[in-house]
Amino acid sequence: MDLICRLSLLGTIPVLQVSGEIDLSTVPLLRDHLTRAIGQHPGTELYVDLDGVTALDDAGLGMLLGAAGRAREQGGELVVVCAGERLRHRLALTGVDRAVRVQGGLAG
Image (cartoon, rainbow, N blue to C red):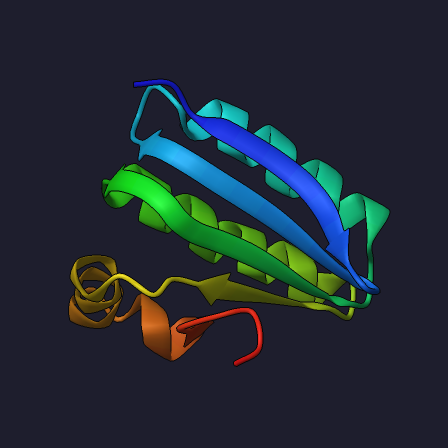
């Protein structure tokens, strides 16, 4: 399955909607979109909506952590949004939710 990334604004909040599989083959595309979004919106909270993601491997987790670091370097923050229990459990199990804010929806 392909990875689709779409950056939009929800009011003034940048939201990168991601759908498909995040794995070793799609991480470069995700990295490009995250880097561009962080660069376009420095010093703000960037929401990464993973509700459309069907698989997330360790390379994808590492990419999210790296992007969170880049956002912080520019005075911003990366916020991961996912309502799905399976993905939220994976983020908790790997400790990603301790390094990056994870919430169930865009409203919090």
